[in-house]
Length: 228
Image: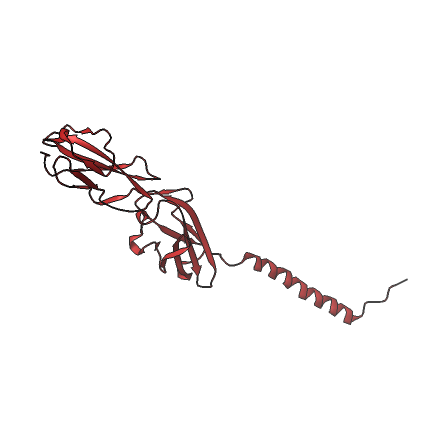
């Protein structure tokens, strides 16, 4: 038996439905390409040991530099520097971070890049600062060079991160300050002069220790004249 023809109106509705569905499928592929996303990298890496002055910079990727609003540098969660123009360097064109201003030990160094559309990217690294204390004033000896009198050693002044501890070692030298030998039992910040010191110069070695440093640093001070 011959089937009756499909009404014209039904054909038009069916064709219209296809016309709507096909463009919708093509649009989803275009959306999948997406816009470029911002990325950032830092020159300080995980596990790195930092000593003295280091060059700290950031590199932004994924977008044009014209689309970068700022790059912020922080240490241990505290913002230290913000750069709004390329190249993105800590402390401006100097680009230098003085790690001696930090305590010795682990710190988190992070850079956060922010695009003008508000999107952000972060690069963070845990690195170790390891710097020796610096002497800003040498040790000195004060007191009278008279038998029975006590000399006192001042350890001097030291800058830089702690914790710092000190030790003392007294030396007996000849009249010109040479041929020095350690004085037995003289390991404190004071020393009482005895007969064996007559005609000799006295020196003290002040050694500074810091938990993360090896070897320790020693500086000497010398009495101004021979004991008589």
